[in-house]
Image (cartoon, rainbow, N blue to C red; front, top):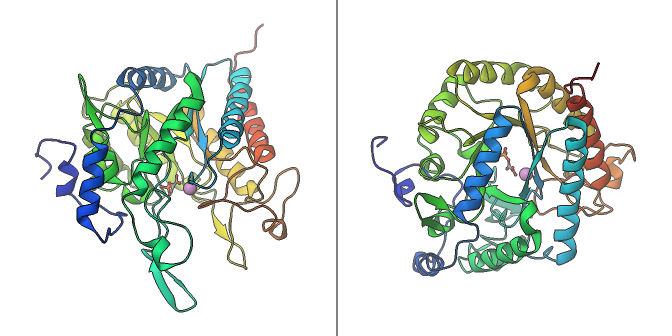
Length: 389
Ligand code: PEP
Ligand code: CO
């Protein structure tokens, strides 16, 4: 199958994990047909500009800051939220730009980050089993049968919210999300001089769908967009190189960002072999650190959280291991003063989490915690700036 030519729908010949089971296939087909006629959310010219900027980062002449919600939601959509999230991303970027004397590329996990992979397909509560919540583009978070039924009509609201968010973000931000919900992504592929995903500037392949034979890998390989690939602790160097051959056969500058999300306790053992193998291959890639997803745990009461100490430990290890190749960060944060991650200067404890826990998915850094993280990264980057004699 690997020899087959690419088309926006060629992923259907591969193994598509993490897809909802739509109860009404005709309604899904009708919805995607309608989306095929919609205007592109982003333009090829902007996608090309981002690829060029990321090529600069690969060469050490820029740094990447990618961040935003784990999952955007329909309920949390407001101009205030967009402003708060984008100002926080801008503040982090400014801090890092100042510390590194480099331009910082800002990519929001915004304007389309609606679909979530789940570790289990069904959620059981009090003896009732319902489909897991897969993000607002798929179904509702409320634990009732109607809300949890995957509904393709939700794609229209996701499209509209993404368009409205993009309109407010202005030209200083690129947008990104995990290219998870393949029927939606396929419907938004557009062709100009090349085929591109018009749902965002930058798309990434998540940890759970980054494997050989993956439909998500097949979908991504034909797109002009710059691509992220999450690298978890189970990924071997050999598999990574084969995935890169597949999604970036031309070794195109700016195309690939490898987002390491190993966990503080695994990074020292899991990351070096990947960096060594990719470096030896001579491929241009950008190495970024996602210090969030390998450091998630549950409290005794069952709340998902992330200790800042673990997040910071992974970041420091990343900078120590990658050295001058450390080219970016990928974080989950919000401009609202939530209490979802523990630790930090305000010493949030597990007991504080209940105060303002609003995430629809993973625990995010609040603005204080995000700026503290920016301080740590700024100190790492400042070490690199040559001191004038
Ligand atoms: C995410 O970025 O929200 C996510 C699910 O990450 P990963 O695929 O790395 O687990
Ligand atoms: Co997440």
